[in-house]
Length: 136
Length: 126
Image (cartoon, rainbow over all chains, first blue to last red; front, top):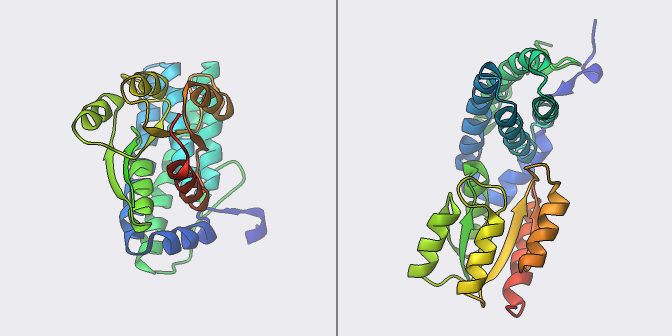
């Protein structure tokens, strides 16, 4: 059985706590805007892959990477960085499989961010190596 | 307290920066594109502009060039996470050569941003 140490946690709680301190009452509003970005961008990347538009895949992935890293979603940021490289290389086959994992991750990340903002500490799903989401 | 205009097509960054700077006591306006920024600046004076580099329609390089020609005394902080095949370091180096007072790499560190804003506001416009 896998242990927590072999997973990379989805949320960087430390980074979110720092953001909360810096932003005070504005924290939840800012996180809501990041959540919208985290949720919608992977869908746009999937559409760009379907359109075989390498430049758009790279550009959208690049934006998602920055957004994820800013809000403490490091693992998703790494996946977006990988998609950016695949887009730049025009490797749609690999990008297609990765974007599906990214979409699953974005749904989980969104739920976890909502729980975090609401102060609800739920048993959290973790990323397996390779980006697949599973329950602990 | 300063009047600051943020230009970034990425909404979460724009809102985050705006919130951070308002909390620090500044008056902040946010726009999503360089063309809107030029309209705003023509109507109201700003002490400082913070602009993303890679944006659709008009990028931050073109904005910097146009802006500093029209308003040579305005101070600008350039921000970038890279793009169009350029690393953040290269993009921000070009922005510096075009007249940006400071430059911030994305993702940004809030403390670093506030220090840069203070430094830019204290600097003498080029």
